Image (cartoon, rainbow, N blue to C red):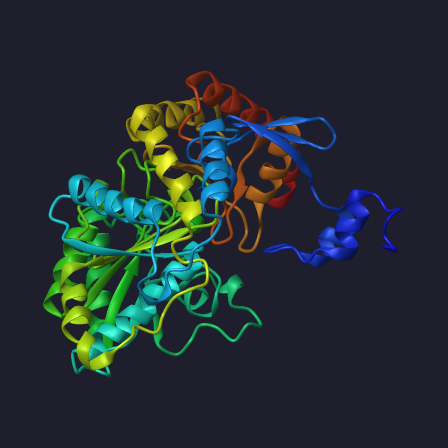
Length: 461
C-alpha cells in the first residue's frame, strides 16, 4: 500500500516529485501550483481559478491548448504503429513525410538556405547536443580535429544538458554543475538597451560586438573554432532582438573563418517571430538548425536538427570509410510524434498562424506600451511577432522586480514569465490568441503592476 495515499495532491508532490528549475525550499514552503485543464489560451488550476497563459507553456503551445485534431492524430498513430525505432535504416511513413515537409518549409521560407537532411530527437536540449556532436564529426572527417570550440553568447539559452547547458550563457544555470565545458566560449550579449554605452549608436554597438568577436577568434585561433550558436531572438535571456546589422556582419565573420552557424530556433521556429522561422526573419544562412517546441506545439516531446548540404556531403562522402554514424536516441523520429507534428503543421498552414503572429505582434506591443509604458519602473517594451518583453530598470543590482510583478500577475489571472538573466517579464502567447485576449491580458498585467507598486518602491530604497 502506498504510504502517501491519505496525503493531499500538493503534499504528495512535495514528498515525491523533483521539479525542474525550481527552488526546493520555496516548493517545500509554498507548495506547487497544480493545473488541471486547458483550452485555447486559458488554463485552469485545481482551485478552479483560470488564467490567460501569455507564455504558451514554455514558448511552445503554438496552436493553443485542447486541439482535438492533434489528439486524434496521436491516437490514430498509436493505434497503427505505437513505436518504431530508426536505427539501422528502419523507418516509418509519418516521419519520412515530416522530414520531407520540414525541408520544403525551410527551403521555401528562408531565402538562400541549402538544407539537406533532418535528424529527429526529443527536446531542444538534445537538438543542441546533436549540433555540437555533428560539428565535431564534420571537422574530424575534414581532417581538422582541432576545430571544435563553440562560441555562444552571454544571456543565451540553449538547454540544460551538459553540452547545451554549457552553451547557455546564464551563469545561474551553471552553479554547482561544473559547467560550462572547456570547449565553449561566450561573447557579449547583443542587447543594446542594457549594454549599449552612453552616446553609442546601435550601429556602433554592433560594430563593437563584431570587433570583440574578431578579437576572440584571433586570440583562440580560427583553426580551433568549429561553430557559433545563436538564437535569432534571444528568448529566455530577455527577448533580445538583434541590433542593427548584427547578423549580416556576424555571418561575414563566420564565412571568412570557416566557422559553422548553428541557428537555435527552438523558440523562434514555427511562427513565433511572424515568419515560419526566425532565420527567415533575419536572413540567416545556418548550417544546422535546432527545432523543438512549436514542432508539435508541445503535444509530444520531439525535436529536429536540419543539416546543411555542405555538412551532409562531408558525412556522405566519408560513409564507406567511417561506417555507421553512431549517434541517435531510442525515440528519434517517433512515428506518433511525427503524426502529431504533421497535424500541427496542417493547423498552422490552414489558420495562417505565422501571419497571425505578424499581425497580432504590434497589437501586443501597443497594448503593453499603452498600459504600462509610462511606469517609472519600466525601461523598455520590445518584441517581434508574438514574442514580447517588459524590462524593468532603476533597481539595485540583484533586485528582482520582475519576479514580484509576475507573482502579482498570476493573482490577477495572467501568466507571464520572470526570466533568469535580466529583470524581464516575457509574453509569448499561443499564436491562436485573439486580439480581445491580448487586450484582456495586458489589462490584467497593468493591474498586477499597480498592485506590485508598494513592493517595487520598497526595493528602490
